[in-house]
Length: 416
Image (cartoon, rainbow, N blue to C red; front, side, top):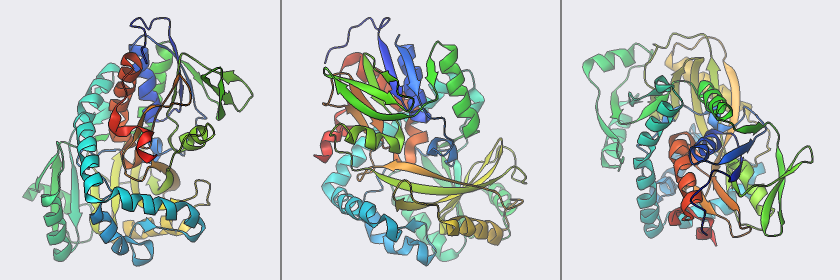
């Protein structure tokens, strides 16, 4: 595919208004495209409810034999974060078999190379994005902590992280002052802790989404708060059919709708083996978390706690399920128990949230061009790294539309 060098008169339609879709829209505007963005405006997306963590340290795909072998220790019924509900059996069984295939050493090694390369660009891309939209304080480049509650888990955890490939991020033992600060947050004794350098936090996910959207509109973007019900092909081009019946197309159409990308592309005959990997959080506006203190991962509990501008959030769980399955209240109860047992400065019950991470079996994103239509592209499936990779994905998609070259490692062709 060859895209004209002068994009001043080119139009693009972006489907999805999460952190990935908004970054794509802004990056395309910078390339001279006139952009329309469609999104329902729902707050149940992982772009809002995530832990705010720029996780550059997660350079090894979760589709690994280490993950497979340790899964039994992480099951929800054993106190862990991994949940395989019976009602989701026909979703998670085929997904699990594909994950097992992707975890084989050769494929894992290939995936690691691709993911590590992508993550190396994540922080510089976010630095460029927050400067571009005029809110440098949105990105807090202060690392994060991982803590353990027993000597045994501390020894295992430190050994595991020391042996892991953490990409551009590094880790070190905490200082005495840092240990004192961490100990002041919890009534439980901390038996070990490390601090990561080279990771970051978004100061507030709500402000992030609002600011990205505002800048998009200020720069001439058209933002339609409407759901795309399906995609159709007409004369070789992709068209979006909105919930109100309107049909839209453009010179380029980019599907970046997270888990919603699956039915849109599969309606065109594309194969998208993606599952709804659901996470839960509780959040309170009333708390005693120190302002500006980095996120803390309580690894024994598979829980991350993050202080945002609008509240303190405790998040956890990896629930493989149907996208429309009812929430599991036991998970919010478990989060509240963790918070209470630790004695964290979390006041009240906290508001409840559930959202979906769009996850592909090899834990790599899908970024590329569809062969179903001449003008159709996609970017979704970022699993736990949607926030981390949002800015760099925007840049990659803009370059792809300009140059016509798609990144080979992330095309959906890998699942055929």
